[in-house]
Length: 338
View (tube, rainbow, N blue to C red):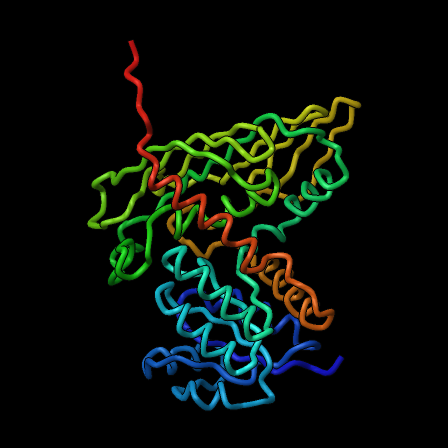
């Protein structure tokens, strides 16, 4: 296959693992253009990465040699940019979330489908070593019927993080701990359990930050399969802990701690894969390996070459958006104890 020419749209915090990944994949793709509307951000990007940047988005969209774009901008901008790129016939790799609201996310997914271009979504946790092995075990039926499941995201975000203008505000991010942080783990969770059917939950704001979104969430889930589970998500757990998924099935159980899998099967097998490492759950949200990003981008390129859906695509991403909506909308139906 000839090298693909790709463009980056948005040069903020999210760009680092993408640049590292595209460089690793230089035999398959060339970063042909890098766009930001901010002259200051373009200058810093060029200084940091040695790549030229432009403020001319129209030129990128008009360039027929560029066949794919990575959109790395804040959530509320995704729909408009995705529509523009799809209309220009370019495949889209979109940073999470798909959009700030599920309604807008559905519209972005539909725009790509109408245009006949692929849409991949950056839920790179699916491509960690332990997650890949656990997915394989489930697909082969090694755990058997799922009975119980839990997902815990006990992270910390400090004052410096929330000092950035608009951070943690609906007007900029669209949501709080669920849409902005825990969404990665929740997407991974649903890829293992199957879709959720019902939830009941509680959510709140700790008051530790001047934000208008939730930073503490607890919920119970009944999955379409009949299994039950719990979700625990917060950014108030100093100094930040490894996110954790636990599954209990008829034939054994499994724990996924960041990228490390340990599975105990009733046939006596103990399966281990990957290492815990850093998942970006502490004060530095970028403290993680770019290797899962690289694997996700490689799958995106494979999907284009093979004319198939990416493993993490717009349709699969809508499952986690709808789960988040349900958790936030749930009244809790609280029953007093005693």
